[in-house]
Image (cartoon, rainbow, N blue to C red; front, top):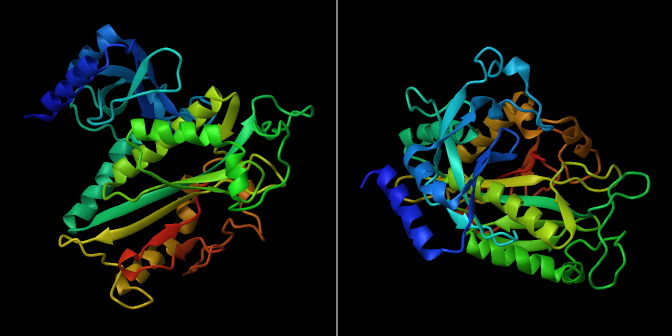
Amino acid sequence: MSPANVAHDEVGRFLAAHPEVEVFELLIPDTNGVLRGKWVPRSAVEKVYSAGIRLPSSVFALDIWGNDVLASGLVIETGDRDGLCKPVAGSLTLVPWLKRPTAQVLMAMYDPDSVQPFFGDPRQVLAQVLAGYTALGLTPVVALELEFYLLDREPSPDGSPQPPLSPGTGRRQWSSQVYGIDELHEFEDFFDGVARACVLQRLPVDTTVAEQAPNQYEINLKHVDDAILAADNAVLLKRVIKGVAQQHQMAATFMAKPYGELAGNGMHIHFSLIDERGFNVFDDGSAEGSALLKHAIAGMVTTMRETMALYAPNTNSYRRFQPGSHAPVSASWGYDNRAAALRIPSGERQAMRIEHRLAG
């Protein structure tokens, strides 16, 4: 069966199983990870699966504020031309935190004439990177950890963000106990809503912990041997957390440095490489790891300056990099060292991996 038939069969089964769904959200992450797209009614979703939808290719040339980046060459020079967006198979799920019965599906962009992957779509860029690994007989195994703050939906009198009122005590938390269990209990209903939404949306969440600052938390995703799926999981977990926070009369932010005097939010990426036999090529049985592990680290250290535009794309990103914090401030690596930009976590040797700690 062709991919198109598989996708169309998927939406048919979903419609039969969920007669209550009224609207479908068609989601495409831009270069900043912001979800763009359209709403379509139930009556139109099968056409989306058979013919796709059109969106301007300049959705990948927007800054964090949603303004066109004219220097990208994707706006005026092209006449703000449309790209063809098609559903990503397996991404159709319910959206449980909205009042109206709603479903969502991820989209990928293609050139409308050649129907080749559009070069500016981050999903398609990652697919090209993974093709290089496949040619080497290697598969990345990836897991992401996302840090975020819960906030009151109303700012403080001076306009700065402030912690939400605790459902348990009715007070705001201005201090924190890192890894404190009581800090999780304070917002137990919120975390229960996140967990239930993740199960419904097949997001493989793992641990949840209280972090360094008041109402700062981290939720980790389990590792998967599909880097595109890992990226999808991270984008959709952010959406779940923000949506459930709104449902509970709060806001959530993944901004790198929402408070000047408190800890920043990082996104830690754990990854290893397995060969065609399923063996981790970073593990050679030693405590230090294989030569290939060290070559990988050397490559990332060498190119760290040039790639900071991806890891820290906004002005606020750089406020997170402060000496004495857990954010890295140099092109460094180390074994079980959370101050390093690249950390080799301790644990079982067959799980030998790199934790990339730069991104906010």
